[in-house]
Figure (cartoon, rainbow, N blue to C red):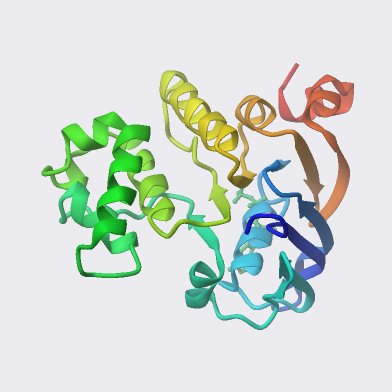
Length: 239
Ligand code: ATP
């Protein structure tokens, strides 16, 4: 059932020692919606995602996915509850073949019909990964590794896919490829939460955005509105 597949983050806060990196941040991702978090370096975007995933301690806040309260769920169990996570910097296993990397994303280590079907779906989404299935992940280009990282997260069949800076270090052409992929996932009805410094990618891939500044939500609105906002354009697009 996808009816209740909606993320709700409320009053999320993160402290590192005495420094408050995230201050009472709240947002929702409606079913099938694609939401972006943008903001300058150090605005608190990555800390917000890590706190959502349980990867850094929260000093306050609650997390719900559909009708489930995930506030006390540990990071390693988030996947089982339907949140797929593509961390900043990709973190594929360079010494393992592409297909092995994908299989490590699956629940079951044994081959079954589901695994085959899931692999096939990912190879359809990323034909280049099918061509390279036997190659070591470390031999792939940055863009191909990003596709592999996304593919691995999809192996868990998430209701919500969370991506941290998928464009980092990629050429403009490869950023375009990532945008195409995100749009296809969105068309398939997957809910997305995207953290990016690349505002063009974010506005292109999302319907709504949250703008963070100094650990707080400074603005929120539709991506179309925000992309035309003079302040956003000046600060984040350099226009
Ligand atoms: P970037 O795009 O550079 O990752 P960001 O918007 O994701 O920026 P965060 O990485 O969440 O921002 O950082 C928010 C604030 O918290 C910054 O002031 C940063 O210096 C601080 N910070 C982040 N991680 C830690 C840490 N482990 N210990 C102490 N301070 C940290």
